[in-house]
Image 1 (spheres, rainbow, N blue to C red):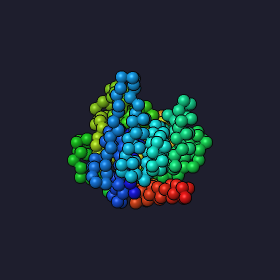
Image 2: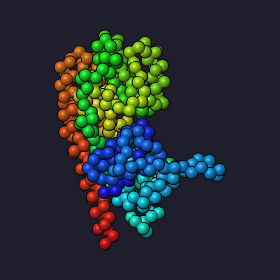
Image 3: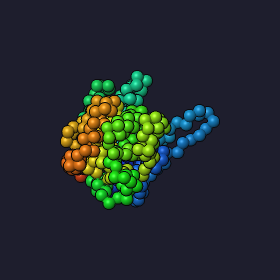
Image 4: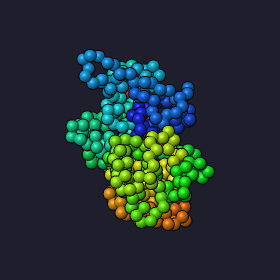
Length: 380
Ligand code: GMT
């Protein structure tokens, strides 16, 4: 198949999933065309099966803001025709599904290119649910030829907010060979020079991720006598507040900010406990990546997280903001190496057996076939 994929290319879960899906599809012999404003962060290799088409913005004195949605639609239509795309698969509803629908409609006399929209989370739970965006998001869902959501939670949230239920749940996935324990990594000695337990948080430091809670947890763990260090991976709006809070709580030297990293697996592979205290998470891809690296997860009991993390088996779940309980849970792992190991092993087993690429990528391919089949049946 010739597949067009559009993602937000910067740091964010939907961009990672779209990019890794493209790579996996290419490995299975499909031609993948990324149509995006920049090369997506996790797309490290282009080859004859994985190509990149940059969306160029047109600047004109009349335009106060450059029209990204139209530039994207135009590029999608051009690529769809020149590369004979079979379908356009967009990640994140706003505005990607609207641009794809526009592209499809603008060329349908020559070629009908079905649009598949994958919902990731905030496109539905925050942005799309905003009253001003709700009608256009619903239109994007209704007009897509197929819609998938990354968790059962997100499907239910979409039904409730948009009264739209033709949604296939296809969860996020991990490649077990990329995400694994790294027992001999020198990074571990660098980050834990005195044999500290490593608590790791990975996010884009948006308020919804509550990274400040990680600092609070670290301070509480220290007060309870825990010998640990907190490694904060990523960057975003809340990073300086975290830094300031670490100073205030007197844990500045126990918290290391390593910024954005090209290879998250380097950090997850040496972590002892993963922290994800988010306020909202439709899936929690970072938690899945940690589990695949045999790292137990301490997270909040919200959104799709309970689908990924089994409380008391692969990690512990708490209410949003309950840093006291989360720090108690860290202490359990800190004081009991055997428990940490058992949880870690179960975490990997659960991640690989439920969310491995071998299981999930065929679900996307089957869905593509279904959508293409439905369209060709309708056109005869
Ligand atoms: O929240 C982010 O980090 C970005 C956002 C996105 O769409 O780029 O992530 C969402 O999609 C991820 C991949 O499917 C999910 O793992 C995240 O749970 C989801 N974030 C939220 O729902 C807040």
